[in-house]
Image (cartoon, rainbow, N blue to C red; front, side, top):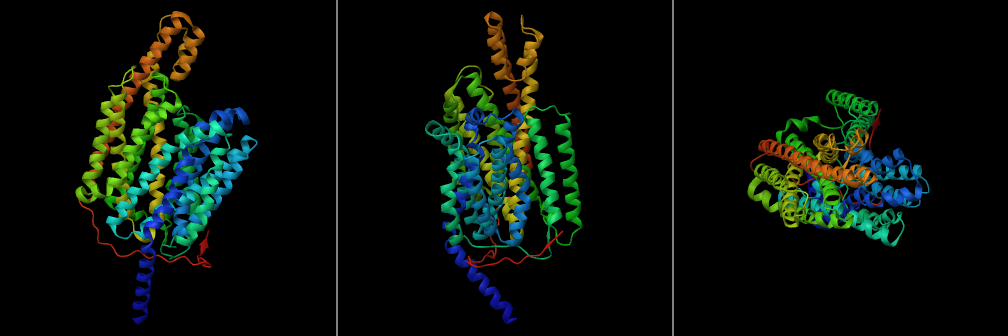
Length: 535
């Protein structure tokens, strides 16, 4: 009995020691998140320069852009659960090192194949970093009230990273070559590695039983197939294409087999019993719906601002900044809102506010209304971040501390899947509403109408080639059809958001703050993880 008591006292002392620097730990974790969020969007503005320099084919260019989020989403569960076993700080530091190395390779790439490989390695590094940051945050903030504030700051940094990425990329491209968008990662990694090793506490989950290698690989391969299929749908690939159906089918089968395997194992890789908790499963569903709306709407909004209103890419980025600032404000105010209103009302309110903003934006037409757009984007950013904040906080709080890495990985996977499904679903709705308006423009040949129906940008190209009154008529019809498609898409998105508001009613009414301290270990320079691995 005395040995058990001594161990418990030592555990509490280690937790208190780590907690004394918990706000410094939060700063380090936010630096990690900022890096990954930047890299997810910084390449977007560099694509034309990469295309001109490396001359990739159409398929190679697609992989250059998509391989990073694809690999990252596929490996989140693998590295999240591995961190629970061998140490979350260890996985995070390895992710730092790999991210820095891959950034150097990407910056110096002289052909498309090397750049694709480097982007894939960046995805591996991102998958190591993302769940580790959330799970360590879960451990060093055992008090739910403080953890809510920490998650708010963490999510505000994510919003900053996503918004600053294109602006930073544009600045670097004006002064340097395209590889500079990757080199910017290396100094941050050189700083993060030693600071992380010195300041971040090590933490693990339960070490019962071996780590399920086969299950981890099944989850990774299954998610790769599903995300690839969803991305191809979002990219305009026909739904019945073999290159879309095969990845989706194989991925779905592997994920079903993964779930069956986890239910049969005495020590599963992921405790699927977490989904039996209404708060956990509802939070995951809310994350998917919120991201579905956000990414699809941002994509369509960017096209509207550039192709309908004629704004430059920089002007478009500046127009979207109010959305980012509102999201930052919601993240910073999230802890206070959560304490006052509780998860149920907070997430439902976030969904309802976002739906209202989306309905307000249906007033948009072919003429610029800057005030309306700014107001709508502010409501949109505040509502979505309120939803995501409440959902993430509820999900992490419902997960057992031993499963923090797995729970964080599930949340990040839901985030990525929601983004992919949003592009595919809302993009399909947009195309279905846009194309019919171009089928019977007077004087336009059928072949030209078919080409113009692919996208608004292609319609403008066709109209320029036709010229004269026919070209003008086609351009006007394409713009009107796009605005009509935008309105239909916004209405569908509002319906999904209201569905999310109803779903959120399953969340707890109030937040429960009584939680025992989380078991963490102070960093040890020569610490060696002991784990068993089985196949």
